[in-house]
Length: 283
Length: 256
Image (cartoon, rainbow over all chains, first blue to last red):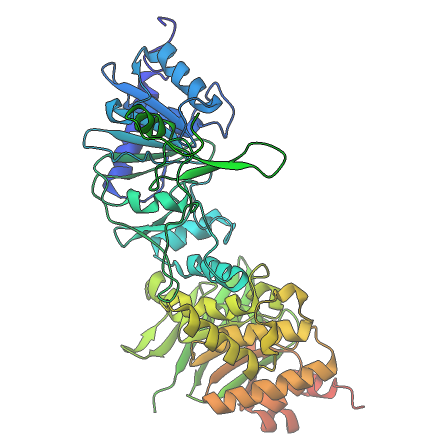
């Protein structure tokens, strides 16, 4: 552990990232460019989130990593171990005990509290990217608040599928100003983005962008008057803990069409099972 | 009467080369102005300078805005100019592909300008889009098809619908019939003439096709080497050209 500076990155780099984070917090939803470093993992594995986590971690922090809600998947385990080795911080899987939570594509079910920081891994920070390929043009659209094109995408959804079929990375408007990509979280999680007690930081390593939501920020999901936003989930209770209010993964369990629905948030599910909640598929 | 658009001394240079030099004219509401000339005579440069796509080196483009009266669009702020570009102005490109979003359905293409000015009701947007497809003679059943599945003439008509849906007062057209075969050209011209008259549009049409201006334009500018060599009423210029170049241009048209 002494071979590395605390949390892997050198102090000047962390300082540079912290400046970007502060700027992002000052202008909620605005994408701040930063000099993203090569990290010892491939792009797409959370290089942006890791750099943001490295910049905000202190030796006293307790660190939690989730990947699609779970604490025990490859991405979560490798990043948790990375910071155990390079920063020596305490780690946990319990949402309420953690002070810094790095997440890939989920917001924990348990409401976060003040003093916590939620760090998102972001693959493509630009919500307008697939509608307008020119970066020079999308920047101009953000600065001039020209967001009509975002609704063209939703219009196309409705005309093709009869409803807004975008189910993850659902675009939001922050404080009535910037349209933001909330990273590929399911739209079930969108309502949690707004008015959250914790600080939310978004890091995109390959695209070299950081953006942020300070606590208690207004975040509105875009929609049409006659096709309002709807936070959707599979219409089942969790097979393990019986929860009806959590986001579910669908698991195929045999080749006869058998399936079960389980909470994607493993910590939430385990905590419920430990207090005696039981679903119909629990052993 | 206040001119809708007043162009004064527009000059654009590309280094030592002249794009267009010292062009001035007034365009009154409901009037259609044709700009003709050979390739490289500065027609498109002039049009792009007026529409705000290029910044001229000198001159003024004064537009009579709805709220503040006559304003110089070159010195107004970029957000204001872009707002004009999607409300009171429309720009029809020569190639429909430049003016359409090819990956978005016909309805989405027409609805984009509506959504850009704040329309947020899906049903209303769709109704208006369908209505406009009808007005440009595209079957309502094609509303969810992408422009890639449309013929060249349909794409051009779709582009016109997309531009006119917000009820602009001034339309810039860059060779609107270029690249279409003659029968499709005739239909498009007929359609354009009807729309211009019905909506009381003002338009500036750049073309090298004299038949287009004969049918659509009230007045004509003839350009050569970046300068206006002759201006006047369309019939007057075409039937009794004064400048040597205008005479050449008129006499070059094949009589079938």
